[in-house]
Length: 401
Image 1 (cartoon, rainbow, N blue to C red):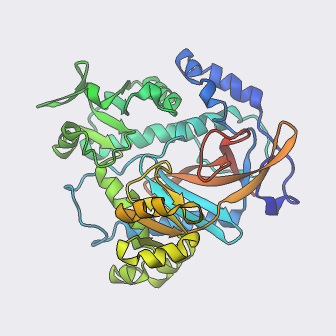
Image 2: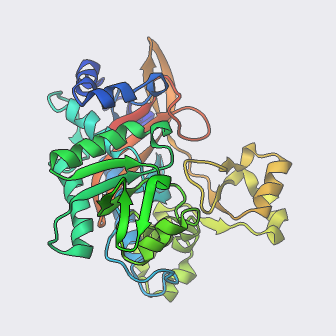
Image 3: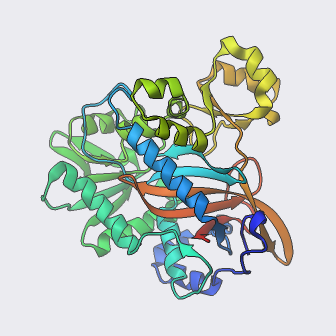
């Protein structure tokens, strides 16, 4: 059973059908089944998470406000020529607590959607309290999203080949979902390959993998600017391949300095954002500020109230709660490019682990395309940041009550 502890008298005990989940995993493919290894023991939580409708509505409201603001003239200085592709799998990550929903960060290559779609599908015959947080025909909508990315740049031309690209793919923790994505594309008649960027061959007429021309790259790289992949960056700039998500969408949405802009009322008024939208952003995003060495005295004295994040970080790498940092780490923060976000504590839920009730933290991720929520999932964990090492934790279904 998993739910916000404040709702313990309102939600009946429920858990997912683990037998159905295991069966769904085994029936995907041999490659997928064998990709689920010992290190994935805590990939899926055995329980759903229940959230209040008011929290879900607030997440929708904050997402709509962000989507509106980032499209305004003057939001950022464009560093690339305008491209039509919107970017797949935006991840809006929230902490939910007694004071509402708080947007912690925005990701433009959020992982886990295919795995959560599998989890949901495996439970389609299970009766659970509350409402689903996924749109109807989820897998078809994910496929349509990639086709739309292609159509936006190439109209009605056929989409023939997609490459799923990341560094050393088999070594990535979420490699199993690369296989799920590949299977989805191939079932739809689209050739799909999984590749390391070093395997790509950029030629005058496009990007190739083992002499197969690539139409679209599903980009899972965490070098968001592609500075370490100059040939791939150049092919993107030269319109030789559809790259999604891409550096332009990262700059517009996911660079963490944007969180400071989104919580700067003076800046927002300068963009002519209406007062009601500014209020929604102020309520739904914790105040975020750039960290400057000149203000070291302030930051050190107030550090316990803030969470420090590198502006181009991902997966909680280099991120620190202020009450946990040493003077040495603090000096590193001052010398790096960091933002500080006022602490918004994650929600907590009670989970039965081997007959013992454990209290786990959770965050909630809204997978968004073109401003619309496709799927909401949670990650249950213990520790400072989300991980997949907690007994009873992992990706969890989210139900609205």
